[in-house]
Image 1: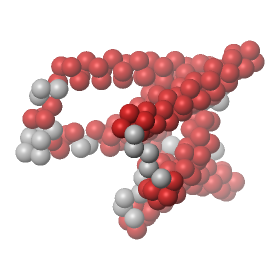
Image 2: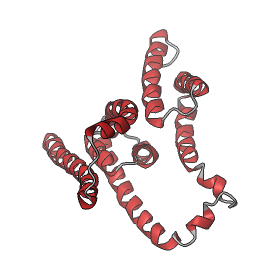
Image 3: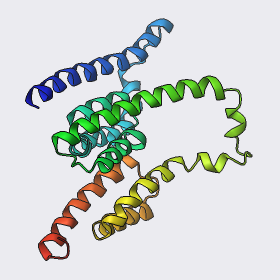
Length: 218
């Protein structure tokens, strides 16, 4: 596994840096094409409120997701995106089905395969969906459509189905983090998922450690 991990980090860093360069090239190319380069003051003024939220969240997500996904899947997930909605649930579901731990060699390989399969499947489905459903999508997602409420509940349904299987197996561990997250949402209902998940993970770890020390769980 040492050789595998070394190559994973080499290729992972290369593609993360490559993706970052391409992301930055898009606005630069548009600015060059229209000869419209905003000043630094305008850029930082628009960036400041976004950076205050998403930059710390991005750092926290790396430390939160990496132990669950493993290095290979982490590199791949952060390059392809949509970790919360697709990549993480796919990896956790695959490891749960195979009954392997996230921090094991088997879990690392299986997680990488699951994220890769999810990325390929997502790309193919999106491509087919865009071509096939583009003429009908405005009618399906319109506010007066009977299917509109279903499109608004896709993510809650996905995480609800995935989370319920873990809650049912480890309900004692889930009580405290769920209660803390619910309290946070009561005070500020528009908190981002990128904030709620890391907080929930930290609270779950601390509360589980305390309950284990107290002998409430084994």
